[in-house]
Image (cartoon, rainbow, N blue to C red):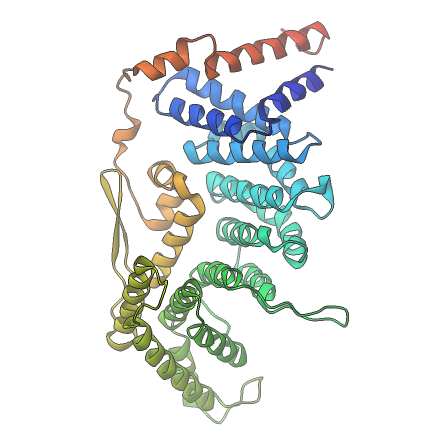
Length: 439
């Protein structure tokens, strides 16, 4: 009875047709996060997330969607270590229940939100047993949902989730390559007798190539399957001729990465034993010559894209981004210069000086969105990934002087904090009345 009453209250908090109800709640929560070191802030975080987690049991899909949105906002606003320590398994399996085929009759939006929440959870826990559990429990539901083509609007979030959980929780190269194959099948499905090929959209192709490149950036010892690499480079080269600029940019970055990790150089080394033939029946020297020819073609394409004139309706910013990227790729191909970017994180500077680092940084920045700065300042896993050591001035123990708005949030009877405290006390009272709560 007590749990059901708690769920009803949680549902009431999120069960509204007005999207502003969640926006206002999450905004107030975000504002409270700015109060450094206050015990009340931790209380409202936990209470708010507990109610959102309870709301994931509700039958109404829109309620679950808004609860998931609030959970994602909370993970973006702060490192939710205490909540994750207590509710890790519950949150993971509630999100997986939304993704699994037919479960809860989830909408594409709910599946996308649940996927994103799992990715946020993985980045929060970092490497370890929990990340491993996320990977092992999620890989099959994600594969099944990616294979389902009922509504492709969920696919970008599924791809990002697959990339993130493999990045954090994958144990070896075989698992990474398996996830990369799953991504590739989204735009190159294995067709059976009852399957009709559907032409993927430009945005879907860009999403797949970006996620695939992100995982490729983590692979150190590539399996030299000549035919596969020839096909991959040929396909990516063909994407450089597509009209969609996001597709060209994703393909260009992928090609730069492929050459940075030394695909052609490895085949060059194998070509010394040219009398041997590969499993595909071609000699290493022939493969090396073929790949060199492909590289020459790619260089010419990059030259054209680096000086492309803007067409009618072409966004100047996007065009400049394309030109700058392909100039960098040309510099890399022709002179061996790697990209060198610097990004301000608070008072610190985060550096990326290779295609691998740049692709990883851009992917995680895109995934975290508004939570990127917070995570880069406080997420130890990301500190290790990027070799980043931020100053700890954000974590000092100096007393925080509340603004007038913050005082209203804390002192007003109608504040989010007091509402959360009242709901928590009511929950305890109900549990005590039915003999569940022991003192």
